[in-house]
Length: 109
Image (cartoon, rainbow, N blue to C red; front, side, top):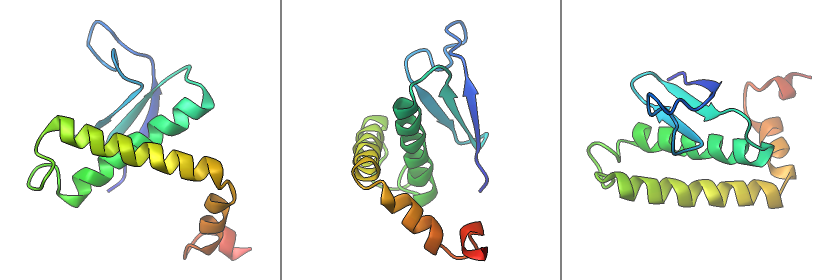
């Protein structure tokens, strides 16, 4: 699936991101991230929302063990925090993966 990522301002009148930094709209294949976040918060929010995408793609949300929004949010939050910590403490890792993934532009140089 293709997921679009957009930077949006919170819209309190329509309750759009009024109480969160970002959100994943699975029916729209869309991730929205609040504007004016720090780089770290923007990265953490994007990873968090990608984890939501992964839980839906795995089937664990609607038919699996994550039938409750609280359980899903707890799992997603834990994984996102761990991934951000991993990437911050191992800055080399993202470049290493990019260089070794098949069909990546870095490999065609």
